[in-house]
Each structure stands twice: as C-alpha cells, then as structure tokens.
Length: 290
Image (cartoon, rainbow, N blue to C red; front, side, top):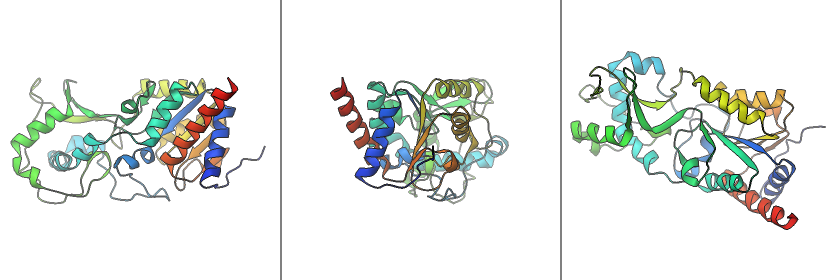
C-alpha cells in the first residue's frame, strides 16, 4: 500500500491522527524536543533539521577541560532556571492521557526535562537521562542538580545577576570570561567531576536503556514519532527497527526528519494542539464503541 505523506492541516490533521490511533491498539511513542517547546524549552534544530545554534558541549570536551566545565556550569547557572521551572504542555498531557486510555504502551523520549513524568506518563524511557540530577564521574555518587546549583550560586554570587537567551537543556547563550567561575568537585571522593546525569553528544546511550526501548517497539503494533527530527542516531534507530519489522510509523513534527521515507503518515501541524485534539477524539470514539 502506498504511504500517505500528504500534509493535512487543522481538523484534517487531527482526524488523520485519530484514525491512526484507532487502527493500532498498542502504540510505542518516540518523542523529541518538539513536544517541549510549548513549555518554553527551545529546540536544538530548525524545521530543516539544521542546528539553530552552536552544537552543545561534547562529552570528551567536558571531561577533558576544566575551562570547558567552568563555561558549562556558569552558563547552566543562568539558563537552567527555565528548564527547572518548565511545566508539561498539551503534548505531554495528551500522551499521558492516551497511556491511561490503554493505546500508548510507553514513551521513549530523547528529552531530559522529565515533563512526561510530570504530566502523568508512567512507562517512560529517558533515553538520554534526566537533567535534574548530577553524577560524580569518579565514584558514581548522585546529587540533585538544584543542590549543586545552590552551591554554585553560593560560590559565584555575582553570576546570578547575568541574563542571557536560554538555549536547549538548561544552557544559556552567554559568552564572557569564565576563568574565575568556581566549580566544586565531589565531596565524597574529593577528586570526581560533577556531570549532569545525561548523555552528552559524543557519548553512548547505556545499553540497558537501548534494550528496554527496543523491547517496547518490538511489543507494539505501531510507532508514533512526535516532535523529533531524528537526526541523532540514538533516536533514529528505533524508527529503523519499526520499519524493518513492518510496523506502520506515523510522525507529527514540524519540518524534515531523517526518517521521512519510512512513514506511513506524516503530519506537519502544531504538535500540542493536534495531539491533544486527536487524543480527545480517540477516547470519545473508544467510549462510544465500548
């Protein structure tokens, strides 16, 4: 059957997505930054899939350079307030609603903001980790990020006066001399480096998370991609897995994605608005049928 990749808008997009939900009783969902932009968290990429700003910190750069860590934590002290204060949007709420309705079996998210869980989703695989905690790269100790930020603020009070444009994942577009910024080491082992407990670019997703995500896709009847360009392989691999298994894939995303050739249905429409309306329409039909 020929794939339908037309770009319906408005009510038609809602109806097409509702039909996809009705046809597939068990849906795995893969989400990206586009589900959180309504919550005030910027995306890394534009609608063509290109970087909207300079690429983020690389894992090797962070681990290998004290100056890079000063720059990272100084900018985070300014920018993380937006991520920390973000609240779930319509897309997060709609996916939690669909999980409760029994059609969404689980969410694989590339985001680190924890908003799916705050919206009520229970089966969430945080592919790239969670930004709300930090890990010592020496002894493995965990610490809540707000606690580390309180220490950073105490050591560097003058930095609280800075304001800058917020970038994705709690970064800030701040360029200045960072050489005086104090970054504490781990108090438990005395030598360890505090790093957000997330997968930086250039690092690898832990195998256990990948296997859990693969199992979720394997057990589903279809895959729904929401708000992701899939330009990073860590997410794209699950679209490939679904395609190779013959599962239909629908995508709700603004602009080009790496998996455009794999979709049975692609919708370029407002993500939160369309997903929320389709979820409500789906549950209405399901109740009527029951």
